[in-house]
Length: 340
Image (cartoon, rainbow, N blue to C red; front, side, top):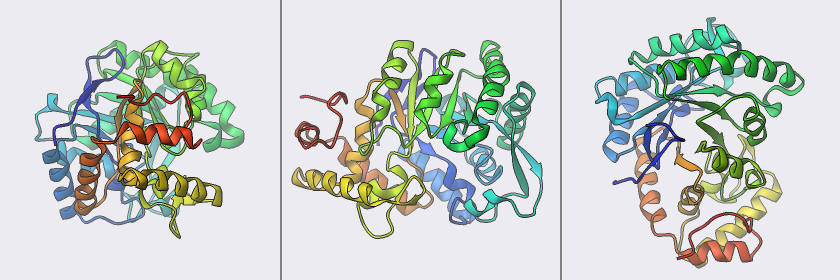
């Protein structure tokens, strides 16, 4: 497909509007044989995706290693590579609570470290796992109150005093071109904007067809400060892909009834316009001018084929769909959408 492109913040990085979220390549919830990984990465490349996001946490280094193997021979200036800091991987093949998210992860244990030294070490370790000479976008991973609970204030302070300084130095030295946060909470992104200048935020599940509370203050501030948003979790962990079916997931857990009810109403409006729900879900975030890229995750070539079909449909969403969703109270009135 011929994807349109957008600039990330005020940097020189230009990304396709759709990219590839790399959590599945860490065997998230499913073990993927290496032959399937190779076929998937080749297919994603041939399809035209040119933004690739990964993290040390995904498969405890497995996703980074697989991305490196798949991208190493590609022309380096033809894609944008993003990874994250905030966890160090220590050798440990035993039990760890996070291991349940990944099938057969690499034999390491992730340990939170948002300090200056921790971020610098994490960056160096990622370069080695990837086996690629540079990382374009470096994101601080999973800070936030929902993630850390009572430890949030302590870890946020360390992140802003230490980790943010390290990221800023790497950008100032030209080692990376863009820095930001990769999180599930828009509130922590906005709080971090008081402490540093960020180029972008990878925000999972918080600006979607289902929920747009980040429009209240965060997204307007991104426009004001020229920081881009990369949208992960555009399906809200699945419910906007499957619809309100039995077993649908929202925020990595079974969808509550209020979510199923709202998604059912959204899907009915989409159906009235001959639009599949997942096509509207992937199209919607890019209607906001702060959003630079949407990154669906895929673990099979069949999922890639399905997403390509959905993305082709997403290019032809009738403007009346957005109008009717607003009229039904299913979308915030201040959500920017095409009008012609």
